[in-house]
Length: 77
Image 1 (cartoon, rainbow, N blue to C red):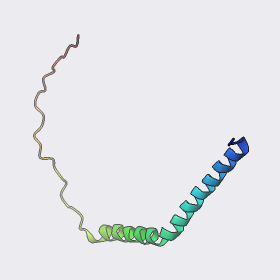
Image 2: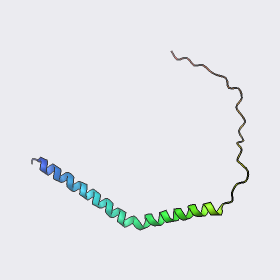
Image 3: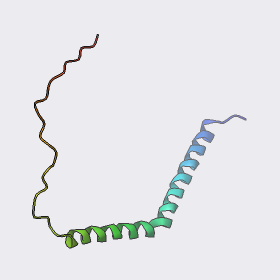
Image 4: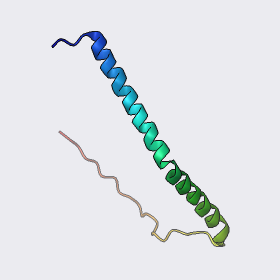
């Protein structure tokens, strides 16, 4: 069985349209869950900005300052 260029193009076009159609159907099926999830994230972010008290003192790092670093020279042969 020989596959001509027209058959090959038709198979590619049909597979592309099936992929796009299935993607659109998944989006429409799960659209409500995506919208609810994004709205709840917006609600959480607005609540976190309003509900948390502001920190009055700045955060100070507790690590000791670096001492005089010694330079080590590595030579590769």
